[in-house]
Length: 392
Length: 151
Image (cartoon, rainbow over the protein chains, first blue to last red):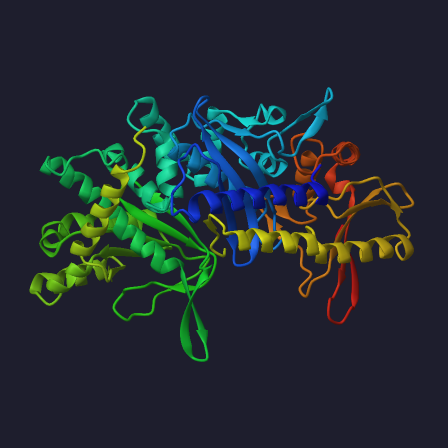
């Protein structure tokens, strides 16, 4: 059982690890190796969620956790401390190149068994496993097996069932590991909706997520870049919708802590994003029109990351897909999202007629403030960053 | 949700954490609410205490009424004093009580203890819909008391 005494003793061990790190690395301006003990603290403002001391145990090739203190602040979601701690431990285990096995040290929530102190997997992590419907079989031996770790990682990343199935299919085919996809999402390289759009909406998601194509192989690389560009454009819209603008003294103030309540879905057949809202919002980027969304009205958006010439070339197919989308999601607000490159053609005859045709379908033309050049730059950065991440 | 950030702490961070852990323990405000609620449960509602280990995210306390029915008590010492909605339903709902009872009998869970397991087993045996759930809310500023028999 976790007692006040146990917590204070573990905080002392954590403080010791911090002092040791400070004298051996920080003061000497050195960085520790993965196999040396490193302390981490996870906080939000002044609320501590988790205190951890970890290292890569090279001989068993697992992640060794020497201190693991987890809080469950009542003002946050249930198991939030364990989510933070496990998110970090699993990502660290992947980054260090381990088998994903996690072993908890002898001082972690110990109990007396046959005259010996034995550790266990922390109880809050077990609560999280129950929530994620993952069965942990070695709780009282103090370790989480690679199979269990993989299941927890997938659960924590939050992929939909369809996406999980596709990831597993790619994994069975030896094209992509679930751990890498989870690491890319948990590490923030791709947001969850962006990764889902890539996995469900592109022909070769494994190439994009593995950053497998060499820019020298121009056509293959461009194919990946187009897929990544689409995901990035969708992500720009996600963030715009999530952002909550609070009005204080008549001025709009953005808050990093507050986000709009939105559920994301992805239509792989039409490459469209479907948003469900928990509150009232307005559709952004519709040229000053006021189009309201509410918990009863969803938003379905065709995401088309095209240059101006590509927009003209693909206009007929986009209109056809828009009609299909409106038919499929009756009662929803429907739109087509283009990058800022649309501006180049909006006053041309074809641009004006295309806008009329879009409105005739009952849809809205949405123009993102990002241009294709900007989207490509971001997509290339992500492909390059992905190249530096463990490849298995 | 607020952004949670991780970093390698400096010695001052570790000392600050230690200081506040020593001063406040794990749950300062909650403890006040719970001891207040225990007094009300016994002296005003006429309930009898059950052997129960209160954990951090489970039930606050467990009693029995004069008919022998379990009474789960939630104490609130906050301005709003509302029951939170979780992934397993609203606090006090049948689904939520069932989930907590299942956790109480699971030896791997943080809510498990031998005493809690007995209560969890009883809740599941009689059915979570057949136990009472009471919210005791004390407003921290006005100290006004409100007792709601949710079920």
